[in-house]
Image: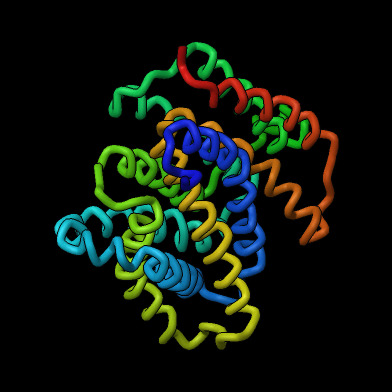
Length: 302
């Protein structure tokens, strides 16, 4: 019997994937830090999702062919999801993250799980217990502790710039992407659905990438750019997006949203291992808040 056939096994796997998915997304932090001067934002995003889409479509080819009529009927939805999750939350973050600070980005994205949880309760009718609310608040405090490096007075010294508006748009778009996946029913499984969303994202990204390609100052394509595309396509692309969609389908948007708070911890660890950035006591203190907070937020409502 398949591991995914029984409800109990699906819940068990989804509960485990909640803790793994942010680690896959942390690879995108390394890609974003390494991309300037190597690959243009929209070309990188198009390559990432083209690779992911081809691989996913290959594995889901029978299901996609069987459900081709319903998939074509819902093509507009896949274009919307592709624009939200792969253009605005992908290429535009690559582009506008260069105009603001990492602290500002982290502070803005810290609102995403709260926005998703509140909207899931109000719009999708999901239940969210007091214990889960407490868990989200504790986890958010842990994220802030990591972001300000333990110096809470630094919050009063944050300088907001124009690029922050685009990051806010990306944060809201991610919340909309997560919620609409839950709101819009589909006969497709997680793999086939993500393949369809990738195709929608590719169509939306294509004109932007073509414009970048013809610019005189666009860097020549190199093996480093190919490596970034492969890394972004396989780990935060196929791995994280598939796992997050699966977890939402099984556990609900409000419960899964809290797992996003693991992102700063995993990104800090990845930066330490790959980029040689320093780890500090504030990471450990943040972990001491984030981990139990997510545990409380991810427990089912009574």
